[in-house]
Length: 124
Image (cartoon, rainbow, N blue to C red):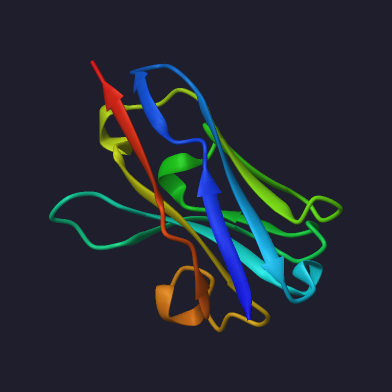
């Protein structure tokens, strides 16, 4: 089992920044791909970014390229999502997810473990 706990969400003005954290406990964290997904009210969950266990491979959704940066610190069992240039449409609950070998990085069903999510609200 892997337990994931997100933090760092909050209220920020458009154009501002936030850094989300996802702390893991349980099995060897460095063996797991970890991803960020988000879900806005009335919308489906969507892929944001994913990072391989050793941090050597990172994938981003097109809508966050150049604005968001995902990273991990395996010594701290934590992954991060640095979000810059936030837009109103970035408002959502952000959740981290983990899997050893996700079949498709962008599909929620590829991940076995999920955190509870953290709310990000961007205001004008």
